[in-house]
Image 1 (tube, rainbow, N blue to C red):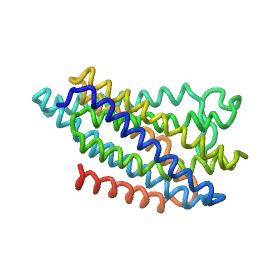
Image 2 (cartoon, rainbow, N blue to C red):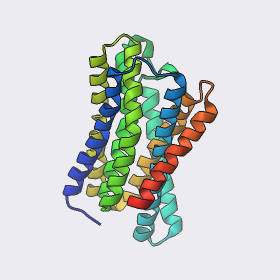
Image 3 (tube, rainbow, N blue to C red):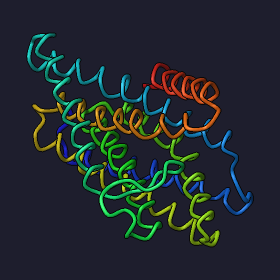
Image 4 (cartoon, helix red, strand yellow):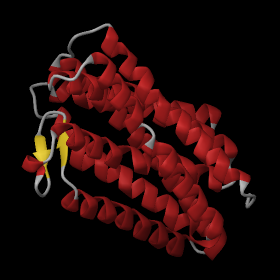
Length: 261
């Protein structure tokens, strides 16, 4: 197990690069005026598929392996990872209840949402999405498996591209200029390196809880997928398209993990 502090910086750098992919997607705002509901749903669903596969192959399976090596028991390892999953999902649920935010299609949600400017609602929402993604990358590196960390960062970066475009176009829809929409979308990606440092440092400082930490990061992402992204992509008349887009994202990430991880 790598315990050098360099893994914290590797996690921070990789999560920063993944976060900057949000800006790559947002660049398209200078060339297109709007995004159809059909295309937006399929893009976001594909991003959810990448996150789903990353949760399983890059977080939960390594968590079970580390837990078994640490505890010497498959049952104990599974229970520890399960506790992490439920902790991560519970933490994100609590934060969602306490912080107002705005969805792409479903609108404002949370306490006092109607009294906060919509721009801040979007920023809070995307931060809630990006922080656990960055944390997942940081945890992946802190586990000592550098290749797994890079594959995870690559997958998160891929799914950030359509998300960045969706954010920028949503901001344009509420009368923000292209430059401001791009800049804000790019800045929302900076939540990822913060999460990356947090995740990597947490494992580095308390290596024995790594199975729980991997489960926590996976649980946070699974909550986002089920509670946020899937309802968004199934709100219109493109449920089947969204379902198959999710499957495409899933197999792309699975392929990356199987061949590069």
